[in-house]
Length: 199
Image (cartoon, rainbow, N blue to C red):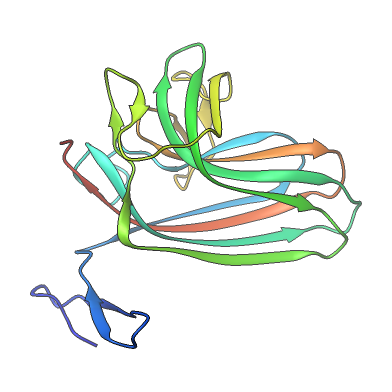
């Protein structure tokens, strides 16, 4: 497997013709979120774009997402339904916030059900947000939460950091929407990403 000038491995991918090409994604960073026994609607921060102190990235203009590895375990104390959603915060203040969702999956929480999935974005999903327009620059979606009180600049949410964090514009976030009460869920998500300056 080839290396970049810094000695990092470069991922490789085959096209439909079987030709092998190299994915040039630079020095990627990683963020891991674990939430156990989730039993109600809950929001999480996966990557806090503005926090270049505690996260491994330095630029704070936008997130470029390369992969998500998801592992969900449903505990054996009941059944129910819910939806896991992943998206980017487009605007937030001390009252509420809005999120553009780019991935969602509905679950019927059968006893002992387990779900694992890896999502790959070989060229990187550019999650830049227009600061003044409060919209995603490169994402079109009708699955949007507007004025949602989960996202506030003065409410601490669980994140990969021990003390959690507060949501901000451009953050990569996760939401578990419990539709009907039932089994609790354990959520594990690993994100591979880089950050870049705003365009």
